[in-house]
Image (cartoon, rainbow over all chains, first blue to last red; front, side):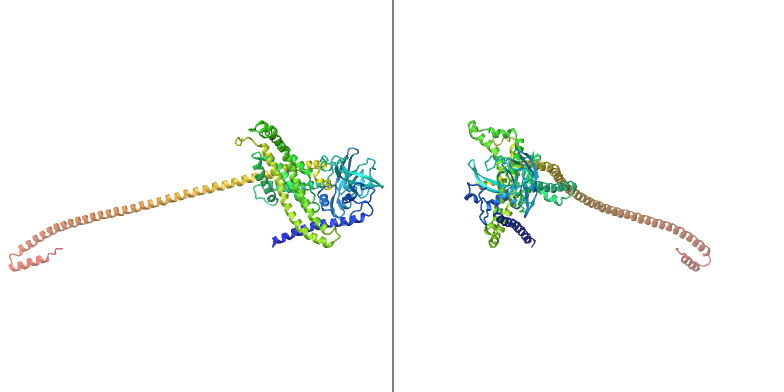
Length: 437
Length: 170
């Protein structure tokens, strides 16, 4: 009986999450159609009709009832400078912005007056909030201080043979092109170094802090209980935390690293709980969850780099001998094939590590968002109630299934990351056995 | 391509890189110092405790069984001793009885012999006394007879007879 009740609670919980998403979007849809009359509105679909002319000066008409599930999903998994709580309520976050031409700008998200869809009504020192993310006016002549700006519009432009999304705002009847924040993808993914750097506490940073604090208090209380009740049977939180600890110790660190495992335990445990905590928090579909932290490549890069550094720091002569000059193989073969492949493999290890976690979590989130998007596709973005109900009927079981799978993936990916980290460290630490060559 | 351009999660951002490094670094440091170290130590201590408790229990059990075996041995020994003692006692008893019997027999024989001796002695004494008395009486009778002989013969005989009758042998 209780088992069945639990399932019902889970179902209701997931349904509720879906409904909150739905309300959010219904609201946005309604607002958007009202605003369309005044300003040139954003519509990526428009780009097809109006690619060359640009957003400014040409009134862009958004197609009524258009809903792009892919775009919505990509928008939701992205990092943002504002945390959308519910409706038009945004949690303000501190912004630390640096532009080489004008120095530091320190403010909070509320200075941009974020309203629906995460767009700011105010430009501050040339910075504008677009879809919850800060962008900067390219034109150095843009007035400093607080300036009222229009709803941002966007257009696609071909720069150096690559299509780029460019956003514009209108202030005082003049159209300004915006610059996105600097990214270190070297232009491969459509980003690159721009006119400013964003070091703000973003939604992801906030979620990381929150998760770390939560984990710290859970573990701190378990640790103090463990010290206090020395010589007694463990109870409460201890019983929750200790199996994880012994699991990482006995099934990951000890078999993969060997006798020197104890030195690496803190890193492995920290990485495991950091990833697991963020994976799980990211699964909650509403505030304070929903941030796609472990599905952001910046986060996985840092974690993979730390593993890589630890691995390199623990390498022994034996490891380099096997990587650079494998004994028992002809010299020509070594120079031509083996050594380049081994060196490539050395760098591929952290790369696969960061990509695996990133791709798994992001893919899971996109799939769930697309399932939820079924409600809007079937319901024609809120215009057809019957369609919405049909969409929800399809979306709820599918999302439920996907979320259950994601729950498994949350644990699995945290485990795999730590397991592989331990294996790489173990490989670096390996001593010659004399039995395999 | 438009899709990918908006796909910001795949673009490494300087802010997020730095913040992740700081937060994870702090998390790593604080957790290892304040959480994992005490938990690890407590777990290790507990494992040691459990192991030693198990070892102790095993040792105690072994000791117990050893003790039990010893007890049984002692018991068997005691039982053996008891039966030996019993046997000895029985033998002693029999010996005592037979000795007593023997002694009683000897005493009896000695008593009987002494009684026979006594009887013999008494008999001899009685005979001596009888001899003496009968001699004396015969002398007295003869004296009296001698005194009466002159008067009457028949009377003399009757007198002798009465005299003889008056002799009470006891």
